[in-house]
Length: 428
Ligand code: XMP
Image 1 (spheres, protein in one colour):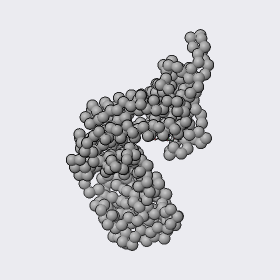
Image 2 (image 1 turned 90 degrees about the horizontal axis):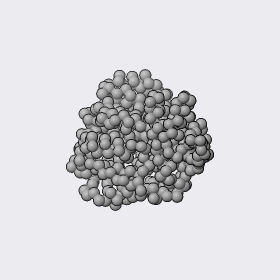
Image 3 (image 1 turned 180 degrees about the vertical axis):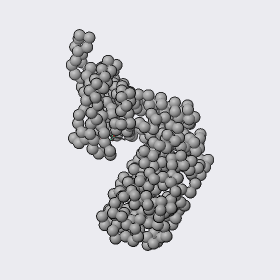
Image 4 (image 1 turned 30 degrees about the horizontal axis):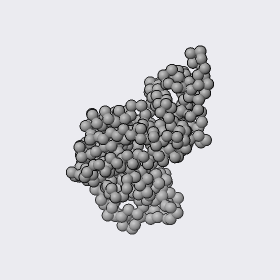
């Protein structure tokens, strides 16, 4: 379907994303494009209805004053400039929602037809055209982004998609099983499940430096993925769960570098895959809506952020199976209790960590010497700074009681009161 579109031309404005999201929120598709977009590239948007120039002070991008090419500047589409006092046409100074609404609907004549259901229908057709009868490979972690990409591709190309799920042993309780159930069984995906638990834990044996742990987990993941990928024949495309903030965060001109950074496999050049990135123009909340529209369960779509190295950076110091299981079990209790208390979806991130030292306690009238569990729950907007969540004492006491009674090897629970800064969200 031809989708009414408003392009936001990035002239160094800091509110590009706010504007694009605002327009999408009005039911009209909007995309951020670089300042040097050509008139031909612009005309390729078949539903283009208007242009918003988003400029910051003096329209500076990377220290250089920028101006769109003449043909763009003098094109016949209605335009609105925000924060660029010296530009032609209508100019407003801030992201005033009523002025933008007036521009989008009254000046450009857009219809509010952008919805996730339409996006899904269009994207499936587009993927079918792009991929044809070729085969696609996807590293399916079970996180929101890769799950939504998998669900879209299953609808678009069915068994021509192969998903590889690497279980590195550092996932939360029930996660690998959920991936197998939802994708392998319910959605009928062509799913290769790799049990690499022993392999990862062996590589991590005795390694206590957090960055070294991260490096090992990342590298080993690529190795396992590669080993499986080379066994497959005739794969033309690699699908990735790149999302819009990945591209936009460092400005539209740096989209390429950001993509490389997010390249899941980090696969060698000679593998020569073409990329399929079906949600790269969606914001996180839109990716979630897309997942819901595709029928993915809420537990998958609305899950809290989870670091790539998983529980590996929450089993502090050198990882042992005993402490890793203590992290996994205590995390599951915390999540269950937060869910039952109505906190799921309200608190940004909450988890447990287990340090590599023990403390003295008393159990069954005898001395115990066991590990503590640290509970951390934080709220943030961008993960750059964070405030702690302050749950009810009664809830914390219930969680504590469950952890010390249900998790083997744990005799003490502490709550982390530290904001970021000075603490980071994760402990490692
Ligand atoms: P920090 O600990 O830096 O975390 O305050 C900020 C956010 O990033 C997540 N995080 C990671 N995500 N790989 C990831 O994919 C990592 O190595 C990593 N370390 C931290 C963390 O969970 C939080 O949401």
